[in-house]
Amino acid sequence: MLKKSILFAMCLFFLAGCGQPRQNELEKVGLLVPDTISDQVWGTKGYKGLLKIQSQYGAEVFYKEGMNNEDAVREAVNEMSGKGVNLIFGHGSEYEAYFEGLNEEYEDIRFVFFNGDADGENVTSLNFNANAMGFFGGMIAGEMTSSNKVGILAAYEWQPEIDGFYEGAFYQNPDVEVKIQYVESWDDVRTALNYTDEMLAEGVDVVYPAGDGYNVPVIERMKEKGLYAIGYVSDQSDLGETTVLTSTIQHVDRLYELVAERYQAGELASGNLYFDFQDNVIEMGTYSPKVDKDFQEKLEQHIETYRQTDKLPNQL
Image (cartoon, rainbow, N blue to C red; front, side, top):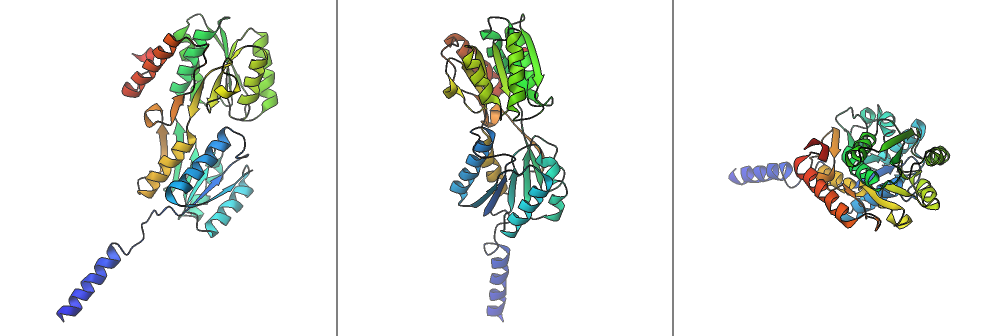
């Protein structure tokens, strides 16, 4: 009888403990991209993040490009579910609408997207606190303009970097005039270039193209004219160190790793999560040699103060 009791207790221990698989085992991960992973900006960063998860966790990864409508997303989610994917990244804000309802149909999948409002226990929205990066980009624009006219080409009005850029430029240069245009798209190159030409005709000599699909053509246009630009999402100093004063970098790939780490540990919260300089997923890029070294040091001191206090220079 004693032997049977011991054997029964051992079985209970095995079932309750080490014999059970971890609830959030990161085995298969999916990525849905609205356009392409080859854009060298937003899509590419998402793909790099997926590869980092593959390398770090040994996870099997899947991705689908051109996922820019509800039917395509639904089909892709169904396919990935059939393969056992338990974590799906929707690489953009549009996936808030696409994932709505799907999360209830696929309760065993954690859905993650960007810059939206997450609703559901298995849905998470990742949001960059981009106001500060816009502020510091604006400071450089305000410092480097000769005409006291700078511009920002935003994709959408809701982007927090817009107000940040305006406030930073004005903080650094009270005489500056900030012109703002909304492309109403992340990748409408033609509209972005038309707005760029309008700004140049008005005397703007520094432009911040805050859209991942059109910022490279805009920077090239500024380079043609011998004027300045602030890079966006990636470090774009390689497009011209005398043109790109610096870049406001969003390390999407690092954020993917952070999400995977939290998911694996069972600590990935549902709802809306926010990330900033303090999380090492936002930083300024390489400074142009055109930017005075003393000013670079001053700006970096402001950034460090912000990391420590959450306060921008105009809030101290």
